[in-house]
Image (cartoon, rainbow, N blue to C red; front, side, top):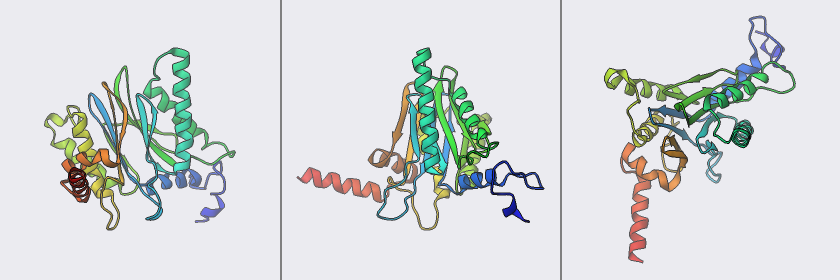
Length: 262
């Protein structure tokens, strides 16, 4: 009631003790296309569903490389995500220049969360309308974090954010509970995590949309694997294993056959 009287500024509290500007930013995250993350003892994998504004437009970027040992997947406003990605890249470069070593993933996430939270207590600017899944590997092992516009951040073994993320969360929970001794994804290798990532996105598609090599992107980082983004033609073999042969696989086979004939 009278919500529009209290949502013009982030420093104005409603009578119920709510900050509507922060809630709007968190709603923007829930409206963004889905992203999922999985962590084992050796690797971290991010998978995301890409959107495009029309059939004539390219798909929006969903995964950003921050450094050789860390990267992010986003849900929400892409412009805000690019601003935060640039900040994270700068922090990693500065840390490497001063200390001659890669930045600790937990410290980087804490700094980004502080940047999120600073926008919730000052009228100078609005909150960031984007949530991040941060995947990284440092001296303490692999890490998977989630950050939100409110400034909160949490570490997970498996998590999903964005539109229809509950379907992916249900998949993650079911697979984790099926593991012996409830170890989750601890013993999974990189390829297994990638397949889980693709399968978990099946429930996040909307309408008659289907998962294809064009609208799915995957990234992986680990002890012996620098942060790498897998998309377009490179992701087709994983799509086949996860979902079975589809149109992308058939198109690739026809293209290969034509090249062989030539």
